[in-house]
Length: 327
Image (cartoon, rainbow, N blue to C red; front, side):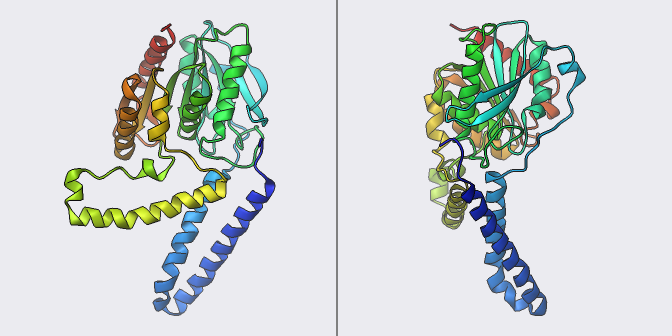
């Protein structure tokens, strides 16, 4: 199914508006008598979860963004129209390099290919040809629902198909760099296309409750307080996951299972912040020997290039050069 039905968006919006209206009404009752906090708190929490789920499933579009002169001036840039593997029309920018290797750049939630210009700049200086892709429901691509990488995998695979069809690209020298949503899409896209020879994934987050809740250690299982906390958090996380699946119409499989299928292709995970670091260590362990993690404890989510403007290009280019030079 190329595009999720329009009624899903209308249904999701209706649910969200009803919950917001109910929360506003509940707020007036609280102002009249504070005792109403007892029954309104669950309603407020449900509205918060629904707002998050709606924002993930139907992000605001970023259609236009200033072009960097240093990147686009006299670069031979091409506007590319391509079709996702499930039939959805997509848009991308193609920037030719001076070598036959190419990188697909996949943006984060609510972004567009043009938000990847910072990454494109240092990769183009290294000689790579680039495809800055607008994922479905983003930028100038079609679609009305973002699925946190599940259907976006078809978009990344189609972008790789396009690069392989070009005469100026070596079909065995194609990699993908993805941020957040783009990282999810790139990983799942690599499961569809063996032509993706290397992956740089920054801000790879949990896709399923199995990813979100790490297994308890023997020491923690022996701690009553930790066991109680785990039992309290689990049903809330389970409901949160179900709500997102309901809004998006998809059921993501755990990345801790899927990432192991990438081997032996090289994989670089860039983790920003303590929570991402702990999660990506588990991902890397599941990915077997083909994976390495670069940890940035003080960086914000998907802001590795901002936090390390000199080291980031050096590491990423060195990784891609090595990975795409392998037979």
